Each structure stands twice: as structure tokens, then as C-alpha cells.
Length: 453
Image 1 (cartoon, rainbow, N blue to C red):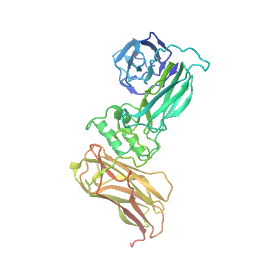
Image 2: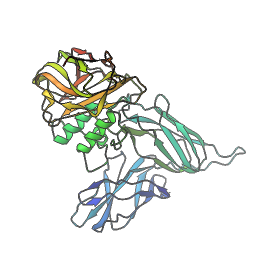
Image 3: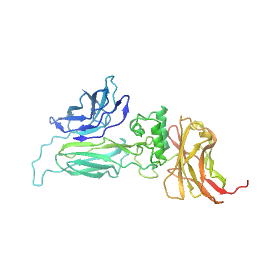
């Protein structure tokens, strides 16, 4: 029997059904099939029964069977050559129903007469398909996905640059499972940023068009009870390069989680998988590999954002400096911003909380920053900020403050503060999740010196 891990998501008063177990599938005729399924019993005491759902599209079930308190069921009348997707739920005496279990799939094989054995044995068969990003099959192919074959055959293959894969020379009439996987993205890597943070925050607050489909699934980075502030914080911490407190952000999720095959006697094509990256909610859902792949930002709504130019007395070990902006029109609905700038760690570094709201962001804003991993002495501070209630910025002056620490006692020491260029340049984010650069992102300078009392 083939076992698939279940969900731990909870809804209302019921937990999700445990793992589906897909045992041997029995063909009942040349045109239809019967499949027997079983699942782990939900251990909550108020569960009174189960429903089995199935259909021909992942996550979309057109048929259901109320099986009562049984933990197994048979489904008959399945069409040969068709992919079916199955999931179960539990319910209580009040009719409250749990979320779906994990989804399993099965392709009903054609009944091909067993060929007469030849000296070379029966012909081998193959399984082939493609990996696409969130059902955008025209452009969003995903390379580098590892697909593992287990059962009567074994092995691993990797999807190519067009997202295609193939297992060939499989045993005729064998049983097997194909499972896709891909290593998570590294925190701070390209593809997830403050745009996604604001997209999740906007959905949680019920503002604007709600997330749906793959975008909604990707927003649940914490795998908890729906979309909430935990997801917002996890995705922002991932963007800032933190390795803790990020939940499942950056991990790939595949649908279906695997495909099972019984008695394969012919080549199978179109054995496809959809995937998404948890936390990536506001992009066009096109797979992006490496740096420089972010969409370009518009420019001009704000004339300038300026890093500080200050002379600091050597008597000060900790000091706060302002980052300023020229006039911001609230009609532009700017509700967030992000950016990276470099500094010399031999001259300054930053407090554990490197940034704080002030001036335009003094009230009801969340501002966070982190020094990205890397070798010195030139390091990078990454900044991310968003309005908690999505009320836009308005006015000019101090945009936020930096909390610095003097790193040496040498008079005349200095460090430039330079904004990084694309894809991590300074940018504002509006309420429609569009990005725009200021007309100028101006550098700064910190000089350490003895000052007269």
C-alpha cells in the first residue's frame, strides 16, 4: 500500500483527516475501474463520520461519498486513461467539516492485452510529464525539480530547462510511485520581498481584492489557521535574510504531492505537476532563477530618498540618524518600502533592532532590518517596512531612523552609505502592489571625529 503524509491544518473544531492510503486498484471492465481507498482515523472524540471527495482536477472535486464512520471506501465507474484526484474530510454531529486531507492521484491505465513474450522479454514502458508554476502552463515552467521513482522501479531524474521530465525503461506491468521535490529557496534570495508581505497583510485586513487560488495557498506560509499576521511576519523575515521565524516561507509545494501507478503496460504522458513557493503571493507566478529577475519598478512619484550625511563625535558609542524623503502625495497610495544599502563595518555597525519608525512612519508602521550574511568589511543592511492599516505615506521629512553603533575610535574614519542597484534598489510599494523608485536614491556618509565641547 502507498502512504501519503496528511495535513495538520485545523478548522472549526475538527482536525484534518490523517494520511490517505491508496492500496491496490482493481480494474472492473475494459472501460471502467474500481479503486479502494483507506485513511487513518481522526482521533478527535467528536468525529462521527467521513466524506470521500474526488474529481479529475487537483483540488477541485465534483463527486463525494458519505462513508459514515468507515475509514475505507471503494469508488467504481472510473474512466480508463483518466487522472483522478482523491481527498477526505471528517465531520461531527453538528455537520462541521474538517479541511481536506492530503490529495492523492491515480491514473486509470488502459487494458492492453499482455503481449506474447519474446526472447528479449516484454517491452519497457515510460512515464513523462512537466512541472509548471501555479498552473501557468504557457510560460511558467520549473527546471531543476527532482522526481523520485519508487516501487518496482527506482531512480531519480530532474526536470530540464523546459520543465519536462521522463522515466524510461520501466518494468512492464510494474507498480510505482513518482514524487517531486525541490530544495527550499535561501532566505533573502530573489523572488520574495515586501510586495508579498503587503499582499498578505492586505488580504488579512480585508482590503482590496482578496487573494485566491495559488496566491492564497502561497500566502499561508505558517500552515496555521488561515492567513494572519504570523504569515506576514514570516515572509518579511525571509526577505530580510533571517533563518528563524520564517515558518515554511521559500519552500516548494507540489500538486499532486505524488502519483501512483499500478500495472503500467503502456507509455504514460502528461503526468504533470503544479508547484508554488510558499510566501510568493504577489508576483505573476513565473519561476525566477537567481538575481536580477525582479520586475522593474516605475519611478518618479517621490523626488528623492536621502541617506544621512553626519559627523559623529567619538564620545558617542550609539547614535540615531535620519533617512529623509521629499514630498509624498497620499494620492500615490504608498504603503510600504524596501531597499538595501552598503556600509563599512570597520566604521559603524547597527543595533539588534537597526531601524525604527519616525516622522512619516512614526505611527502604525512595522519597520524591520537585518545585516545580510557576507564577508566584510563592506556589508549590506536590508530594510523592509509596511503600513499596518495600509494608510499611505503623506508629507515630507524624516522617513525613518537608523540606530547605529560606532565601531572604532579613530578620528577621521568614515564610511559611505550607498543604495544598491537593481534588483534590491530602494523602492516604494503602493496599495495595488505596484513598485516605484524615487527619482533619486541619494547616498550618505558617516564621519567619526573629535568635536569641540
